[in-house]
Image (cartoon, rainbow, N blue to C red; front, top):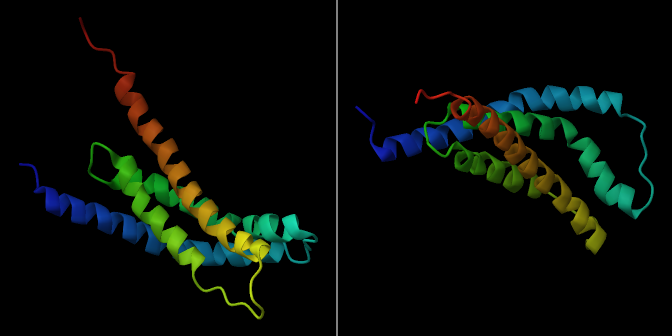
Length: 147
């Protein structure tokens, strides 16, 4: 007997939220170690400071976000599991975009730097989900059916 659609939807949302929450248990130590490896790197110029620095500093979390997207695709109960990876991707984008404080009024380049990390995290989560969805669908399409 198939469970009701509401229960499946709630379960899938909880899988996405739980994967997002558990990812931070891994991401914080990984960020700490990565920060020790990249200590002393300076970023000069507008492009390097506004685009490259947020990418490099959020690289460990982006890696974990890709794993979260893939795990959501593998764990949800749905015919279209890729749609359920949008929820943790939205969580990554939302929580990475809040908490910026400025000592002076921010300029456009400051806003660009503020937007790079949420976009990177959301895209890496969705990228991991797309790869997992393709891997999940590959064995089904490769099955040989007798004539």
